[in-house]
Length: 460
Ligand code: F6P
Image 1 (cartoon, rainbow, N blue to C red):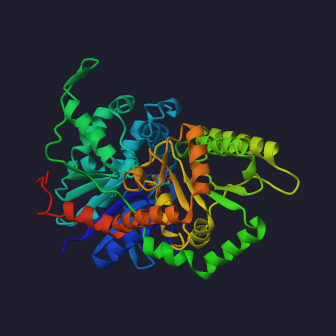
Image 2 (image 1 turned 90 degrees about the vertical axis):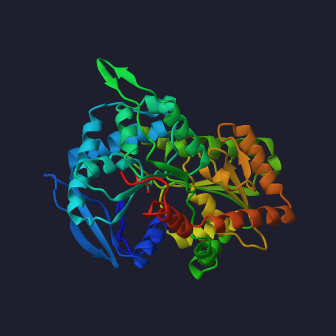
């Protein structure tokens, strides 16, 4: 059987793997030969040509160090100040420094050079996310004829947003050199297909740009999921119960509304707190009976737009606390740190409302984890943004437009007032979808389609 080679910006570290993705891909590599390739997390003075191979908790991991300058241009620069905001339709937050593109390409070329000597001709290569769009091109330029698949974990943009990205035509040509491109949602497949069908030959200055041939690239949606059974078990574990006990001691019988998100402008955190502010303003009966807990671990905090989001959120939380708090009651807790999965599972389970309202999101696994952690006899309600990929598979959630804080506030009221029978009925639908779209099946479906003989497209 062919080996599987997984490539991503970050590689899984030592100790219990944090994310569901790392757990699922570890399982794939546990059942088949192969290895994981990516950045070591280390910055050096000189670019590193050869990968270091290590065994990390039974997993073979090949890693390269990056120079500080390249890493800045590739990660904070092109990936997270140009691609991330553009793909999330936040051109207002993009910083267009076109020289970052050179660093982005240099790192992709360095990855390809270090990976190439490790490859066998029949290895199946699975590349993850927007940091590595040019990797297949770079590998193919070095002679790789392997099956190479790409999975985009974030949304695919509309054509207009794509056109705002410097070198977008080269990037899309890079996309066309994959055998399979996987997206989170049908929405993303539609946006990609729209671009692929309508892009035409054009000129840039004096340069003629040919239309891109996507005919050999297979494209499909593979909605990612969590491991719902593992989360259910975790939510009933002693560590989760300890967290529930701790929270109950502090909250009494107040209903908990819970948000858990990286501190990222795409997550709609200020709008969410404003919706909660309206809930308290319009429903005085809820004061002292409800509490919002927002967990928001800092993310990408060297980037100005992330610092500004953090400041905005500080100000809004401060305003709501100042306005509604009383000496013996506070309407919200805002925690800027990360928690382990057992504690999170406990928080999810005791929350009457899971509030997941990104302005735009690839999938959003918090929604999956919240659903999986519920007590079937007394489940909470998921309030979910219609702009998260998860909205396509969770129609039983209360779907909201996160920009409309009146609508979100009204959904919160409905969730808090929802009778047990309706909560159970909605949760059963949600849990069935979380089981169908679990992370193990996601990985297998992608690899089955990419593996030789099973995908429609021939090898490039
Ligand atoms: O969801 C997109 C993503 O880039 C993931 O690939 C990553 O795990 C997560 O966001 C966190 O981002 P970063 O690696 O920049 O901290």
